[in-house]
Length: 346
Image 1: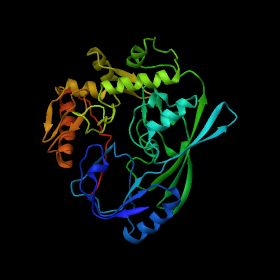
Image 2: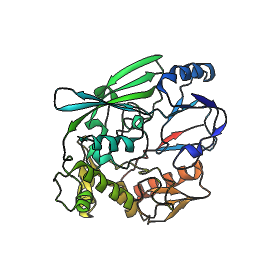
Image 3: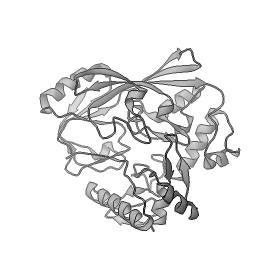
């Protein structure tokens, strides 16, 4: 494990925004984690550290971060075998890239993650906001996580129920109490994917919604759809400084649902039982067009209704853009958006 002082955090995030870290450690070997705990105890004055994975869902403050920052870069996937109920257990190190895990599971003939193809970031970050896309989410397959509990000062194992997984949330969201070290998933062995539940993916595959296809084909179709939206890292040079979806698709009331459907808004039921309207549709409805400038160095993407950073962007200007979109959507539609970015730093 190497520790660096005063390193800029911007290059470690997909927005390429943010000031320096007072202390930055990169963990490549899980066996070195106790050294980081000791380093933190000596330098953090009792403050828990910030954990950084792929940096694809964070906005680092312009002043940087005075508490220790841990970049989780551990890798490894172990297929442990059948658990006896038709599912196969898979143990994954927290720093393992999610897109690589999806590729591995599809190649092994395991389904349950094929619709998550192309999502950036580390596997350890996925329970934090219960990452999901195109009908699948981490809650569908997560069995347990192994984590360091900074409050208790020891390693703990939390089962999926204890993780409090909901729509883009969990007990880990907004908390630095735990650092996730490894995760255990249960996947099913099948040559065919889960039923294709989204029209855009079905159209890419030229099949009807609800059909099952080879898992590799489903993953490729999801990747193609994500690329068209500029939601795959390094695919589009113009819109590459992004955090993907800046806002959650908000839950709406029965009265709002009726009015939104009269406007042909995409209103759908979600796995947690909530009814939500597309955040992208709300942003467009509020008058923000593609490439629309919102704040200094920050604009709407040229491919999708989300925010991206350009030259001159700062954490302050990106936060200003988030606030501007939030208030304009509320004013024009009566619906309140919630940012899903993790804001870290001083």
